[in-house]
View 1 (cartoon, protein in one colour):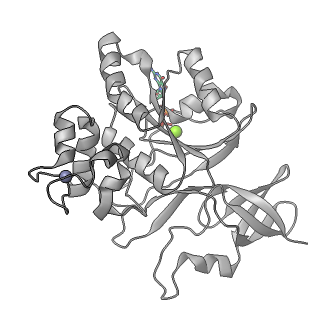
View 2 (cartoon, rainbow, N blue to C red):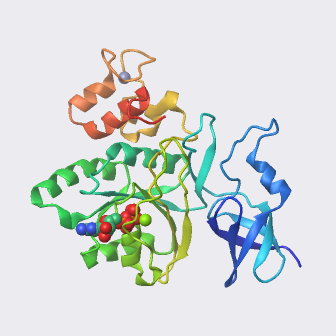
Length: 314
Ligand SMILES: Nc1nc2c(ncn2[C@@H]2O[C@H](COP(=O)(O)OP(=O)(O)O)[C@@H](O)[C@H]2O)c(=O)[nH]1
Ligand SMILES: [Mg+2]
Ligand SMILES: [Zn+2]
């Protein structure tokens, strides 16, 4: 049978579900594609050479199975450093997405801004837009709402859209629908923040499992990651991801981390020392801007944690 083009909607390392027209074929990889996992020197460079969202050329074997022969160039990618390995291995979580929707929750679990900032850096590195979604708004009172909004204003000023949701507030689900409409989005966030619940609310037919914590693994061992792409009936596609516990930066120039914090830009080059890394140098314009309330202290703390490697992740 002739080769044709399709899209990977599920990836499980040894087989891949490829969608073409209205059928789904379970595919394996041609040796040539499999070998892209390693560099010419034999070093592993990708956790998996094929990712959900990839456009591929495949050859059907019959109506249900096929072989992937080629991966078409990716427009964007959301990658992280593959967890639990000493080597630098790239894990492409989703390819070709237009935007990253980073979900945090008001409580259970508490919002983790370090985590959020890592997601935003990866979105930018992968050339995708980012939307921040604060979920479980029903669980907090006025005071805490005000406090969280004041923190999230800093993200709006960076050009991120920020939305406030609750699966119990239908209007907020409508807002999320508008965000997702006609785009290919990847939903990321810690386990339990409500990613699958939100998608079920957006499109009740999806029937995604909620409230499940991923399989228990020893620390450092790789967790089963099953990303899946869904079509939205009002237009667009969305990839749900399992709770990402580690967001190892990938493709980020950590020596020049200040470049990933757009709010620092006006101050770069105005510090007393040329090689200032804005940690505790005297005459640092960035620190002065934080003290003057011009840069969000939450964002600055993220910068410090990432720059010093003291947020528990590499
Ligand atoms: N009160 C409240 N609970 C929520 C909300 N969204 C999700 N949950 C609950 O949070 C838990 C985890 O949800 P789940 O969708 O599995 O999170 P995921 O791991 O991010 O996919 C479940 O018990 C949900 O019922 C919300 O907006 N409000
Ligand atoms: Mg989930
Ligand atoms: Zn400085």
